[in-house]
Image (cartoon, rainbow, N blue to C red):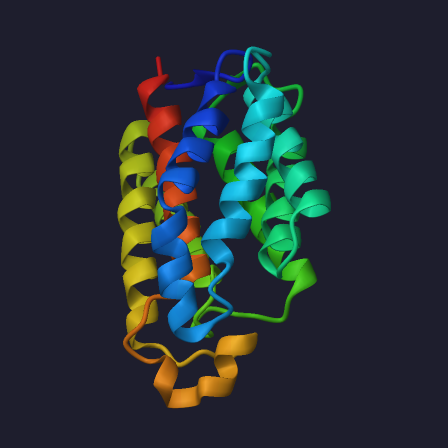
Length: 213
C-alpha cells in the first residue's frame, strides 16, 4: 500500500505558497472581473506570511498546514481567509498523529476540510465558488479509491477533477458573494476561489504523489 511520510512532507506547504504567490496577479485579475479584485493579493499575503514562519522549521505536513490555516484565519481579510483557514486547520487536525498517510487518511482529511468550508458558508456546488473545484476533486479521489486504484492514480484523478471543476465555473452564474450581484454578467469568467482551490489541490496532491513509497 502506498503511503507518504507526514513528518517529512511539510515542504509541500512551502511549494503551495510559492504557487499562490506566483499567481497573485492572475488571481486578482480574474477576481477583478466579477469581484473585489483582491483575491490574489490577500491570498499571496497570507500564504507568504505562513511560508516565512515555516521556512527552515522542517515541520510535518499536519503542523505546516495548521500554521497556514491559522495565519489565513487571523491575518488576512476578505471572505477567503476564514474559508481556507478553516479548511487547512481541519485537514491538519485529521492528519495529526498519523505517521504514514495512506489514501484513506488523505480522503478523511479532505472531507474534514470540505466540512469546515461548508460549516461557514451556505454555498453549494453550482454556485460558482471554490466548492465547484473542491467537491468534484474529493469525489473523484474517493471513486478512484473505491475502484481499487493506487494512491498515485487516485491523486491524478483528483487533480484532473479539480481542473475540470475550476473550468466549470466559466459557465456558471455566481450565486454567492459580491459577484452574485452581477447575475448573468458573471458568466464567462472563472471564479477566483475555484481557481486558487485548483492550484492548492494540485500542489498538495503533486507533493504527496512525489513522496509516495
